[in-house]
Length: 404
Image 1 (cartoon, rainbow, N blue to C red):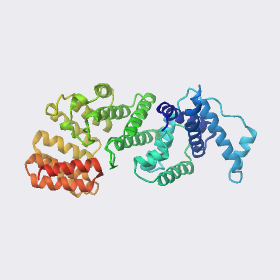
Image 2: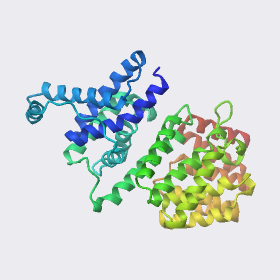
Image 3: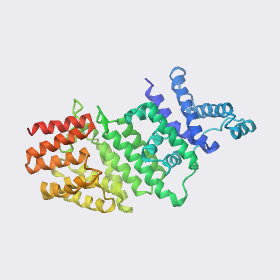
Image 4: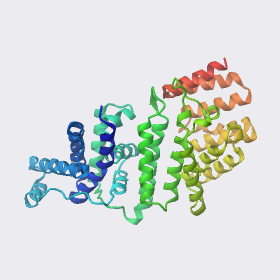
């Protein structure tokens, strides 16, 4: 087991070393492989020999040598690189104070990549997770994830991806992709899509760390601030989200004294400051909704009319089936469960949600509120069959059993 302090140093310095190498040599895929080899060497040597005084310089030196060796050993395909190394055999210079992590984020979110590939490459190159860790998070074999990451790096190279901030015309689009990747990483960690555990705290912590870094680099973007606030406000529920056995505890039944008050206060402050100067985008609106829940001392004290109003705006700004699902619950709390069911009904014909366990689970909840217990029980059982998350499955089955 790697020492946590060593692991933390490797995870935070790895992206900086990768940025320095790519800035100097280009060749993102080759540099990323070299950095991974250097990180592996450090994980093997540092626990026995101690962390060097300048970990970044150590990693940069080792990665630079690995890169040089790779180029020299592959002379048939890399004639140009061999010539460069022969003419300029110097080791890479020291890591500068310039932070390249945002540039790495942009590069990993190149539009030539699919969202799953963007997520995997971001976790590997920027998040510092190993291929095995990423594969475990998405419940696929390590070899499968390795191939996905390798293909992603090749696509970036073929598409002409360069280690520079995107042109102005692409910047907004690329920032949107970066935000989506970070949101997907956080969501997968907060509610694992499959497997025995509800939470993956390594993924949620990594997403929050990267969102903080992104905000420090682009502090005037309201959606970046909104995403960070949303993550903090959501993650603050984590201590109360499962019981001692690991079973899921729904929001309305959570012990709010266990919520992380520091994260809640920070998230609310971010929402208030951002709404004062920025237009309300999707992430900022979701954060505002989370802030309303955070400020309610009990579930009964929630300002549901304000939540409904915010969801109405969100549905206008970024309509989608998941927004409708959440809005239906809020509407039910204000206008009664039948109003929520009416809002939910069209989603039965939406292929994006017709077979999704979330639609069945929300419908079951609203049917239970309406008093139609047999229909609610059947909907809970349907939701349990559809989910691949064991904690969610157990929770939904327990709700159905309670109504038997």
